[in-house]
Amino acid sequence: MLTGISFQENGPVDAARLNALYRLIGWDRKARRTEAETEQMLRVSHYHVAAHTSDGLLVGFARVCGDPYIAHCLDLITHPGYRRRGIATRCAQRVVQHLRDSNYVIAYGLDGSGIDGFYSRFGFRDSKETAMEWRPSRS
Image (cartoon, rainbow, N blue to C red; front, side, top):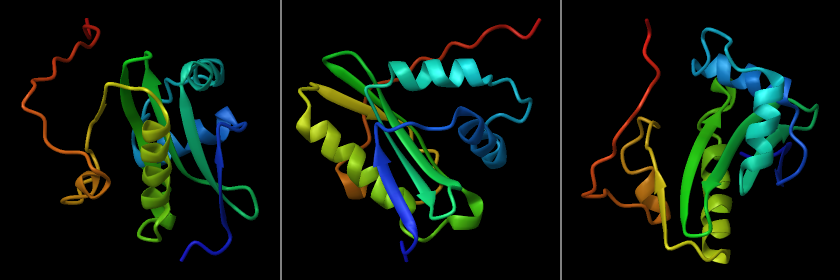
């Protein structure tokens, strides 16, 4: 199923292609993300993994941010035309391996997959902690 898909950890990622993938999955409908901001996001991430087809199409991505103690697993995304091929699973496996190889005390992730039990397959479990959210006002 992963024939012709390569995975690269902490390597260069084309910000324009990553932004296009965010828009394609509906996470940036207003095209707010700039290439400069996305490049900065990649620089401050502790870890990222990108999946590309043999012709260079970005079809999967995931990243880890945080500090030396707490990690946040973010942006586990797959190109809609390449879903159900194991790309997100392989990205998640690599994220978890990064977590194991690091000294984090705890790692958090938000499950927006819509797939029951997806994250639990990798050792994540529901937290009893309540997350707080802040967003800029829309005025």
